[in-house]
Each structure stands twice: as structure tokens, then as C-alpha cells.
Length: 268
Image 1 (tube, rainbow, N blue to C red):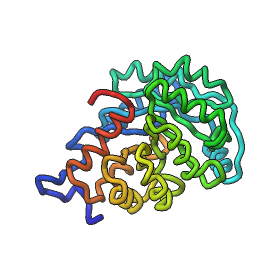
Image 2: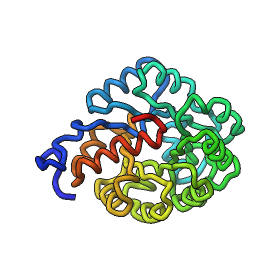
Image 3: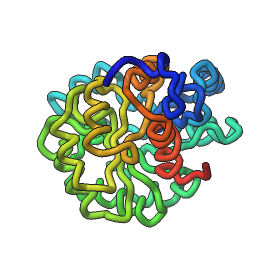
Image 4: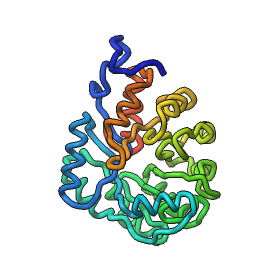
């Protein structure tokens, strides 16, 4: 990691991240037309062409921060209908993932899943570990639908990166994404855990620049996904982080577009 990409002038380097197409692999979309317009404006400001979107606000930030440490359960459903409606009015720029509630039958996801491009799991929100049969049944439906699976991990038994790896090992045909650079912002152990499990990608939001750089070196560009975590994180912050990695143009093409397009199952 030497300097920032903005200063590069070589033919294989890139002068700015916005000189290439950007596909944000993880953003949240709240209900309502104002939220849709705000997200699209933020994408325009940052040169982001497309975004994977999932519902937010199933648990408040205060509640989620407690549950990450102490545990707890939320039984409420995410507003997947609002995400789908907003995506349908985006001209193809917003790509909806289904935020599943494992307290509901997997048949709910199976019924509605074909209108979405992937599955989002949040064990720390709903309080069920990766080993729970209800979570496993959701991934089985994702396999049926040809969906990728995005999930967060935490430092609790059943919720960790090792548990996620074990889940992915049972579904080799499914592509998984490790959200938010693993557990915490310096999860080098998590990088090593997913290393041998090649159907797990590493999503970069919320990790340190050093963490993302190490993931790049250990996993390769073909296993990294650029994500913003909008609106809790400003996309410009995440893009600036990427600017400060010594990426080649081909590496940024993979991280910023190609991998996300394959993960979401959309044409380039």
C-alpha cells in the first residue's frame, strides 16, 4: 500500500476510481421515494453506476450494537417490498437482495425470491446462528434460485467467520460474501479462515485500508467486492480507502465491477 491512486499516471494504473465503472455490492434502501432519490443522487456524486440494495432499519443502530456483543433477537420483517419497488423505479441501477427473516418459513423467501437477485442474512439482527436449521434452509432456497448470499459475522459462538465458512462448505454451488470485511476492522484471522473456501468473497466496507490490502494480497482481486454500507457510511469514504491501495486497473475492474456483477447475477 503505497500512496493513493489519484497520483498514479502509469498506463496500468488508474488516475481516479471514477474512470471505471463502479458496482457497489452493499447499500441499504429505506422505504419511500425520497430515500430512492437520495441514494441515486449519492451514487451519481460518486460515479457509482449500480448498487446492490437491501432493506435497512430492522434493528436500530443502538439495538444492533448491543446485540452484536450481548446477543438478542429481532422477529420483525424487513421491508423487502419497498426495496423491490424502489429498484423497479431505478432504471436497472438498483439491484435488490431479499433480506430474509429466519423466524419465518423459508417458503416466504422461495415465494418471493425470484423477483430478487440474492439473499441477505443478518444473524446478529435475528439472533439465530449460522448453524440453525432455519438459516440453513434459507441458504438451500438460495441454491435453488441461483442466488448469492451476503451475511455479517460477529464474535460470538455460532455467529463467527468460522461458522460462516462451515455453512459455505455445505453449499459449494452458492457464492457467499463475507460482509463488512469480517468481524471488526482488522479481521486478518477471518481472511485466513475464508482463504481455502473459494466460494466466499470478501466485501470491503468498514474495514481498514490495511485490512483490505492484506485481503487483496492473500485472496486476490477476484475475491474482493467493493461495498459502501450506505447510508451509515459515506460512499466517498469507502472509495477514498480504495484509492489509497496500490491497485492496477485490472484489479480495480474486478473489485469494483466484475465480481459484483457475477455475485448479483446480472449482465455486465
